Length: 171
Image (cartoon, rainbow, N blue to C red; front, side, top):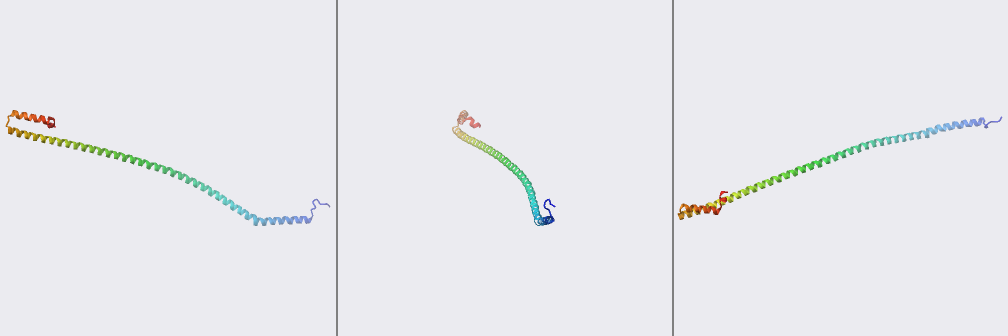
């Protein structure tokens, strides 16, 4: 009897034992190598996923911080503009106040100068009147001394007034 693949009982027995040994070796290897490797890969995958999740949350947090920073920068710019505007307004107010004070001082100086000029004018007029009175007294003394008539006396008064000037006497 001729066998097709030369299969005999010993070959089948060896093949079954080899298959059982390979299966047992597979189970042993699966337990000893594959299982730890799978756990290692699973832990690595979980760690990578956690890192990705952490990176995503960090990115969101960074985006939020960036938006907050931009908002603060815009607020700071507004504050700076407000401070500058307020400083300009204070400077304008101080300028107006200084100009108003200068105008008041100038008006006071002019008023004081006019008052002093008026006083000087009055003083000069008083001095002229005093001189006229002195001249009139002298003249009166001469008239009395000369015992002249009233016509001569009137002519002397008229002459004295013309010498002094009527505008000086009347002011």
